[in-house]
Picture 1: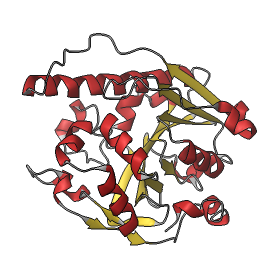
Picture 2: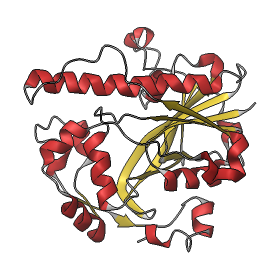
Picture 3: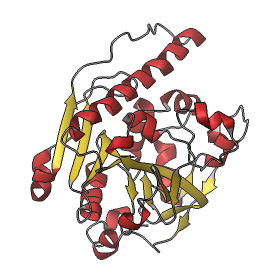
Length: 295
């Protein structure tokens, strides 16, 4: 069995370097997709340079998207209709990138393991052979922000997902599978695309190192990717993020996602916890190299 590690790339050269060195002993191929357009539709430069990773060059499959999705909806102003269209266009751009990952696994066999993650979601593959006993694998990960050792307390992140190629419907389907195991008595499971009974949730499943960047790069990320509409409404500035990083404070609450809050998750500040326990061995052994990214 070979392992294909598949991710979408923006500009996370630091995180990709950590990912390569952490997973290299387990992964056979790293599949990376980059688009020349942000999720908000802004043109961007090509940031991935395979020559930076000479040691792993034979393991990397790099795919560049140089076009927008077809049938984008018109966005003229800040009206509700235009904002709705903008959100739908964002989803179309994300879907285009996930679909492109399929080009990187054409040579995978039906029993090879396919992992999909964001670049900063690093699965713990130490005991992966023992965990492949279900159709779907979901990695239960610790969540860190701004620095490699600033932990979001008491919160589990379910980022990396995996299955054998023979079970893979498409990458977007795999990435958004619900992070729980449903029982046989749930009839809706039989008709759902993202609810499954045959799921193994892997404890100690890795690390999500979110926004390990400076304030300028974080601001660019939030303004152009994923939830950029929600971020725009927050009113936060680059200087705000500089202060948050220095004080180890996260300006939004992930638990709000589980509530019905009209204020959104930017309504609360969360104090991050300095914690270097159970980090990847590569980071612990190379902490001097990454001193800037430890608190």
